[in-house]
Image (tube, rainbow, N blue to C red; front, side, top):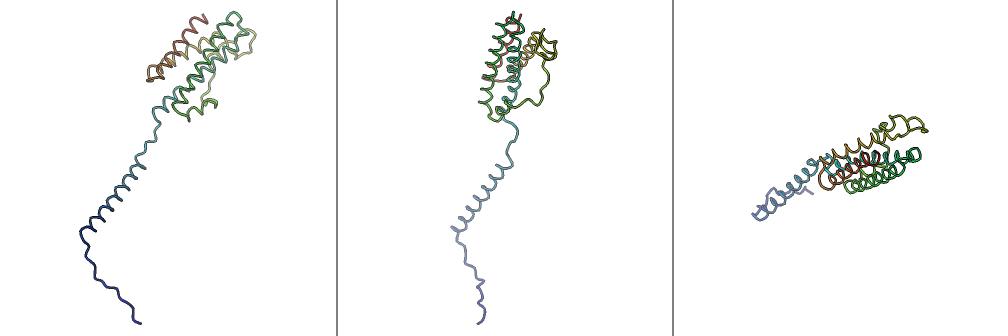
Amino acid sequence: MPPIERSTVRQPVDRRTALRGGLVASVAVAGAGMAGLGLTGCDTSPSAETLLAESLVPLVRSALADEGAARALIPVEPGYGAALRVVADQRAQHARALREEIIRLDQDVASTLDRPSASASPSASGSESAAPGMPPGSPSLAGLRADLGSASTQAHDLALSAGGYASGLTGSIAAAITSMREVQLA
């Protein structure tokens, strides 16, 4: 049996078929172009919320350190016992409020709060001479005052650069810390 030859005669394409084919092709090309933009146009830099949350982390760690130092000094500095309790309680509240703001801004940054700081360095309270009856490197009243001064400055600076709620929160914390240092621990 002889092989069947295909006809090389082409059917003419009518206008409607050509337009439909062009429309389908242009939609496919546009879709591929948009997908390409979506893949290559991604911004991988941290969001403003992430950056703000990261800038609040040192304030939380500072508040927790100040709270711990104040509580450790209560039995050693009986004349300042009541004032140290106020400082410890207020710094614990500062840490809580800052943590809540970080959680609101960025859950991933909030998850780093429970890990030790990679840049942990001795605080001013550890570099001052220890209070009488405390081992060397223990908190001292002078060290706590110095740490509170640093924390106030840090919160103040962040209040000026942050916006919205975070600015008000850190400004309020800066004022409270200054009050603790200048009034409670005077």
